[in-house]
Length: 210
Image (cartoon, rainbow, N blue to C red; front, side, top):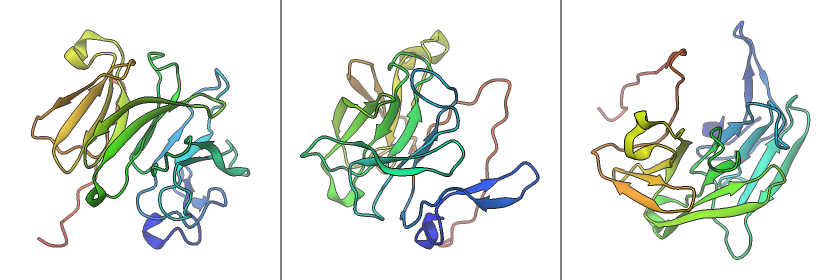
């Protein structure tokens, strides 16, 4: 619901029968709202907890919010970047399920593309404590995923992927923060890891200008 200015709320819950209901009291988040959900209860995380970047709607740059697993409890300052950093968390969030990044929540920052400058990749433990993974001089970062250390991924095995959609760059980042750019003619917005026993669903739309 970010396209409607986050009103009357931002998050919906869709049941298996297609019924749509309000999910939490979160509202007034603008633009693209990036989120991640804890997949299991372990290491201080609770399965079903929802984490989201506050983006531009509430003027709370550098913060990640959390919604409880049942949707009834919301905090807008679960995690905060240390000053003087005030980057917007509108680049992407994901959970490390490989253990290579400590099982932490991974978050990519991103100001509006036209502002340029440095973009950052952070990891947060279950207490919300931030650790900087790396900083990249690039106009935009969006989307993030952590790949398992499996040779099927070649040079990307065991690394974190994020990318610059505008310039067509994919960055492969090691747990120690070394970032290697790949120029493959791909303009990535999101990265999704689909298990081989599950399906990928896509939508198609017509560009309003064409």
